[in-house]
Image (tube, rainbow, N blue to C red; front, top):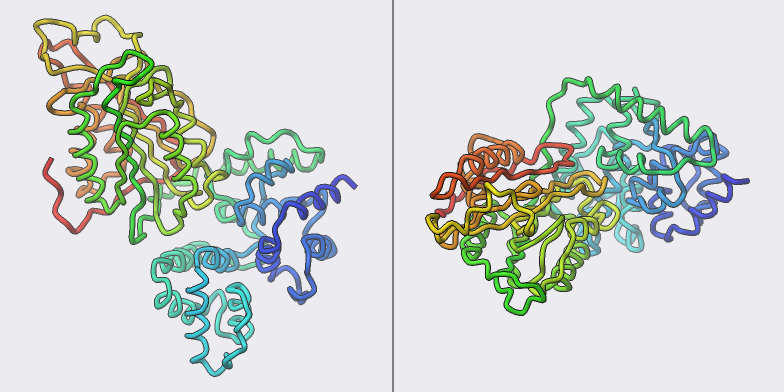
Length: 489
């Protein structure tokens, strides 16, 4: 009864369109049962139970389905275990992923193209959804796991930015020799059932009411541990979108209306200019917002959360400001914690960024807890143009695909030259330009930035700084080298 109650609760939380998506994903498992015979989630769950795919001892299919449709919140709510094997074929997931990103206009264009094929008489597809169109193509032998020609033709002409998804599917199919719905080896199946970005999600789940569920979760952990010995080279995140992504730069300079006594950040406009040049060159949509208070900063993050990032590869956010323990200041003197910047954009809060790198760079003051050998900007013999920002790194949420890079380690200052900008931002921009031609990934570049900044000194030779980054990335961030010549900083 407890498992039936869980299924009932899951069904009540799913929208009609989500139920239709689940039915489509289960097409290969239903053994002849048509979508017409499935009106509700309960109908689907009953058929799957009758076919021995879903039960209190086998709840993993439900987890897999909810993962595919990005219902992470429901997985947490129901305390479901991680899937141990793939029952949903990569082919079926590919079609679903395409359907999510195709617009209504794309759907009409697809139908128009199909009407040129004698197997699709005009009017046959008028009231159908994109998933129903895919099913019709399969029934007419125009689409299958090994026959993607018509699908590729359609996507190329209707929404070419999605061609990369088909290419990746074909590459993975060759690598894994997948046969569905037969059970695959654990290492291969887990790599397709579950993105590594979702692995940490399960580590936080409380024990389920089903002992088998707990055992299954532990088996999944053991499987993942056994995969650590895989010698395959780490792949880069996909960087094929027409627009790389949004680069938001929050640059706080004027603190005259602050509740706290905070100086004007002279020289920060130089950092802003360098960042704009470099990230526009890297094909980002650069948005700059100056002198934001706490509420404005949070509003900008909410705007990012509400943005559809499905046609982009990643997200970059810079905050240039004063700050203190694990936070940055708005120009009103109120703080915004690092986690307030990042958590709204995790895979649950912003599904179109799930599995994509979210890169946060903080150039910010840390407060007054400065080690004596570093606190040298007051020296009369020092460089009068050299001042400092500093920041303290904190642990971030367990979600994957985040990078938090901070200009200084805890308790240390972060230097800013009033005429040349900050050491950290300037070295970051310079190294992006010089190291991308060598196909260096972002972590290599940041390590080089650490080295460059650590070697820098004020005019007294005693002012030092070392940046830090915390990575929860699963793959390499390797920006394609642009065709345009690099900017001059």
